Length: 433
Image (cartoon, rainbow, N blue to C red; front, side):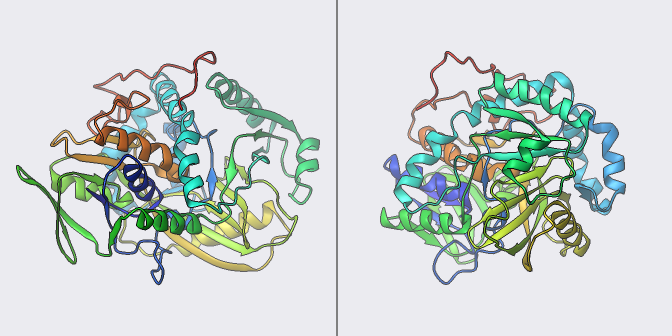
């Protein structure tokens, strides 16, 4: 069967399909293979953090009143290209509707359900790839500048604890003990114990590709341009010719929406333009991935560099880099960690974003031979493994280990039509395995 897309979600899905006994061919113009440039992939430039604590959707209650100010602030964590507004309206409308309190609570439970399964999705793949260096055990640190922000963090921590997410509120003194090189602009913070960092996410993707090839998988190094469905099967029209398959998984990241449309399936999906700036690594300067949630980016210690990655810019796939976004990211990173060294590089990539922050995982409404594994936003690295395992179970005719109705490609992303069940975590219930 064919998998369109060789980011971490597509690669994880392909390897899980092989583990379930399927032959796979991966279609991507620049897969992580020797001699190929993988820099444009979102899986190259992410924040390198696997974050089970990220259970809250971006569309939070009250965000409607904050959006205008965010959009007028060129240095803020959220921006868009105003001339793209007509194309963005369906996405923005569903985004605002998703911020209603009952809907927000429902979506939080759905994301938390996925988070409780991420280890069973990742662990077998990491074991097969081998030589994966994890900064595990230190956790992820969130910082808050005021008493009001810290009170909100307390409320959020209660909800996270209810969903089985381990974390603690820290005083300013406890933060200084853990990270003495941070500028002391924080009032307090939160430490999430189960988050960890991949020292090199690009190397992990290369490892997944090697494991796929070792199992007999193949790569077509062309771009998918069309997806046709007929009674005989599915045909992917690529820049190198036609590829016919009995089943197809669409995992093309930010490019998934247009390919889905050509297959007859409409997805409320849009493009986030993500930036990062990397700095030369300095031993002992930073131990945890650290962020101010109000600034919207992580500062992450990695192998050979410290990376500032994040923020949200809605603007499609065809716009040039905005230098101001990189300048702001560098300036805020240096303010957060004054000892940062020389800037090494910067980057712009594209994330597939849904208005309700839930990915699309499941079969097409048009044809059950087409499956979707896309729309993960900032959580592709975190959710790639479990997404692949769920898709592999569906393709194999098995019942997935969790209810996928909330992640259906045919769901209402605004919540106006469907009320899919996502029960809260019951600590007495056994975790998925």
